[in-house]
Amino acid sequence: MTPILTVLFFALLALSVPVAFAMLGGVAGALWIEGKPMAVMAQRLYTSTQSFPMLAIPFFILAGNVMMSGRFGEYLVNIARLLVGHMKGGLGHVSVIGSVMFGGVSGSAVADALALGNALIPVQKREGYPGGFAAAINASSATISVLIPPSIPLILYGLIANVSIVDLFVAGVLPGVLLGGGMLCMVGVVAHWRNLPRAPLPGGFRAFRRQILTAIPAILMPVFVIGTLRFGIATPTEVSVMAVAYALIVSGLVYRDLSLRALWRAMVDTGLMTGAVMLIIMASSTVQWILTAERVPMELAAWVTSAFSEPWMVILAINAVLLLVGAFLDMPAAVLLLSPILVSVGNAIGLDPVQLGLIIVVNLSIGLYTPPVGTTLFISAAIAGVGIGQTVKALLPFYAVALLVLMLISYVPMLTIY
Image (tube, rainbow, N blue to C red; front, side, top):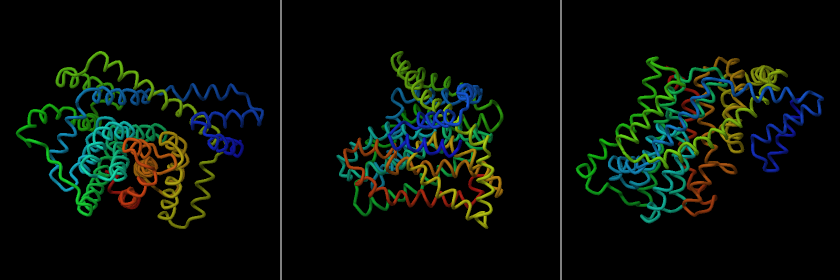
């Protein structure tokens, strides 16, 4: 059934059918052509949702939405301006630092690109930043959010690959910091070349010290998440519920800007985002069932290990495939579809599954700002009011940074294994 499924899936994608429905259509078509009962598909759709750890996804999304429903974004931008605004291209540096801090709250690159892009890109353009460069900074730095805990893609990988989510969260911190540091350096180089202005916070520390104290509880959310998990205080699902309670307390009692309308909006947005993720999970589980039943992952792993003589060559091939797939598939769908296959390949060459998870997520994060389907690329270009080609040209140095970090985590295990 695999060849039929593959042909139908790519045919539906070519017709612009959403990924989840393309997967479901491919499975349904393959079952029908092979004369298999459709009841099997319905059973797989239902079974894939019956996972207690999966509850962490909607709760982490809700925690981020609650935290961002008020003035936290404003506090975050001001803190970043206080830290790096005095440098050449200050607002560009603010975008990167903001993404690092924002990632610890939302875990979503799309949410990061929307929130920080709307806040910073118009101001950057008024300060003389080329629209393509402003969009490029936002599109690339937003993907840091998928590495800094709580990361939704890392949760999905952990569930599919049966890998500790705690280990993945801890392992994602250093690559996220490396990616942020590399992008800061690249912004600095371009800022000096283009002579972009500084953007210090008016009044400096004296004017902002009260807001810093107010913002600290929200910025400490990733520390709370990692610390609670690392010391075994609670499971990821329990921590996600605690994160929602934490967000409600900070937004409702510290910031005092959480209205009933804002809470309702956060819950509706969480429902929509969770529904989209769950639909992809349900669809991909049916595809995985067929692939596993026909031993595709095992046969592919055997072929790869026989075709490539050295493990480093296998890792390079994995990276090439992921970069290509990431340019065409949304990240959740790609993680769910490819993880079972790549885990089999990784096991065959002795690649640690935690390291493999970071390799997968970093590769696919590059796809978020790579045409033709780059989500953060299109969001940022639309906010900046510039063409995709202009933004991609400005993105070239950021691709170089991301690929360098990718090579480091691919071939230096100590960066992801503790």
